[in-house]
Length: 403
Image (cartoon, rainbow, N blue to C red; front, side, top):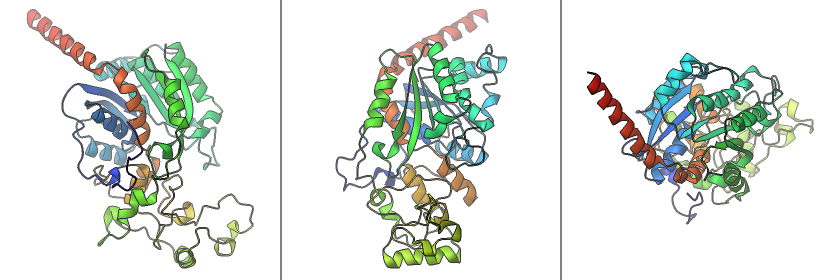
């Protein structure tokens, strides 16, 4: 599924307000999404499945944040989405035999085509100076390997920040080696999301594993990692139509700024500059030795944004000043920059902080959309659907005979 628009001047697909019917029909692509957040990876899988003429059957989606699960359910109402620690469903260690809990999880999920997830990445992030590389949550990455053993999916995808490779516990290598022991072909790469059709300079580390002979993870990731950035995917393309809303409120309401930051933004707007001079920065940023040039910066219509984080509503958190207004980005704009189209709704969120966190932590759907487009044709979904119907029919016949 090509990411680049054939006509860069055409309206952005991010403006689509009518949700495709991802849930109905057959055959269905069966997925499990762990550490699901609000559903960025699931949305990408849904888009790829829809493009291939398949429905989406979400056998299990798990996250520990209730607000994110509420949004997930709002957008995927037929999903088996639960608010819980992933350990409640996969409670064994890598070396353990399958536990009773995991047997129940496997029986409930059934045949799984795609298993994917984005384990907590804050402990790996270069923005985290407190527990970087050595955070207990980093080991949650290994739960994806455990889930692969339990569910035996055709494809496994794990995404994280590029710095996950430097984790002191070696979670990537451990997972890589373990999946190979299970019989998967495994590959890793760092992928630029902008090249996949997202108006954002964001890079993600991807581990992709396959037990399908015709699916080559190395080839797929090499293709994604080698794609060139497309200048068409800029902020004008992503949020240009949101620059002048008549009555902005809620999702579109501008974030409030401190008087000092308002003055900084007014300077940038009046001067036409994009980087704040040292004299107008806080004193801790005036020594010239800091590495925070983008902070207090203004975005450009003709460029993609920097990586969107939960701090997108404050220019003190990064280059988040709107390209043409004296304000930071709205939640709607940040969601668009992450790649969420307008039919994806955040209506259940009542707190601005929750909204900022789930949008900032979300995985751009384009990642799973592009991987899905590469693997779905080889998964034999149609044949699996026929086999499942035969198994169900046989089971019903056996029950009738027993009765």
